[in-house]
Image (cartoon, rainbow over all chains, first blue to last red):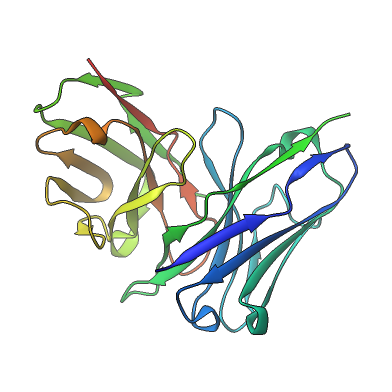
Length: 121
Length: 109
């Protein structure tokens, strides 16, 4: 059974840092790209970052230069280092596994339950 | 960036009825790179449809997706009590940005 479990969320002051983790099990982690997606309280979904199996990385403009995605295949883990946090970064952060369709499109087939990050003074 | 607009914002129906949810893109989506997700309160989104019309593993056949280009539809043929939730459309491709619609809330009438 595919499982994704996020951790590392919490309350942080504006300008502070947090490191989120996503522990994967039930599949060969190294064979899949991974995403981070967030959801502000009562709002919709926002894609924020993607890392491929080969290490290709993309970020949404809203987090570029502040957030860093990484992965450790030996530990079956995905990470998101978040620096210079702002009030508007308050959200539940989900990790999601990539599936690739025959045309190279990458959609999200499994999601973790999320971890809440609250940025507030 | 492709903007997705979902309608209606809220849909009130009864169990047993048919639900039709719409997702319109600001520009053509190539290769039908359009997915639908269902999200219940306090839960992660669940993949329903990918490639505009392919059901994900384990999704009942009362869920179906259709459309191409800029107009896409999610249809639930006969609503079950567990179907009521928020639904998001999502456009994806081989490179970002990947965007979501703002969601349609399907509530019990």
